[in-house]
Image (cartoon, rainbow, N blue to C red; front, top):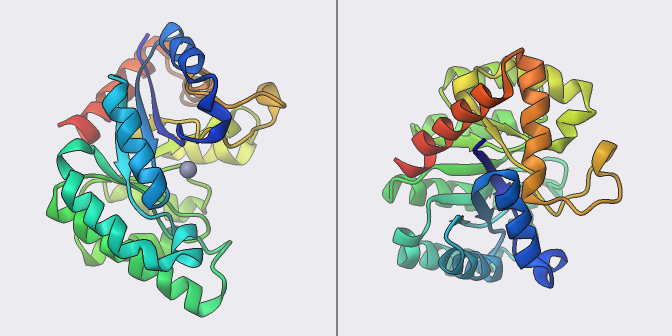
Length: 254
Ligand SMILES: [Zn+2]
């Protein structure tokens, strides 16, 4: 069974001293591809380094909306890095908008400015966007529409059902985390996403409840996400893993 973790912060210090084990456990479970997503300049460098060292880790670099709030002046350096390293990345991410941590009008306008810059780069280098859209999916969609973006992936979608319907009608991809194992709301959302637009992720090291309570979130836990998604969609797990693997390839490796 082929598994893919399309969104994880693998450079996090929680993984540092046990990275070899985390990766071999992932392999053992069937994880064949991991997208490491960055948040700022430093983590973009770490992401590039991990991807160059580990054959099944792929790099997505960019400026996270939270970084736009506290270190907006990094934007130029991140932009420069994406230009310089565009051949070594498979996506621009983690980028987007966040209304939970908008920090007022000024903060939000900085997020929008940074996100637009990231979208422009994704278009220029023909890369998909790995998107964070907490409480802001509508605004994210608006930006994608303005730029006519074709390749986008909404990670851990938690916004409303009607917005999700718009997201999938635009042909964008959507991934779910281990929260789907216990969140009825996430399960309802996942059911809306057509099979050929579904992806799995962990967003590690973000902690979860349920089976993962007090456990470090790792790429191998995409298996839990796959199992629940197959239940929600009423499809054989093996078959769904093939579909999701093809989705990942279509969006990111083509
Ligand atoms: Zn993330």
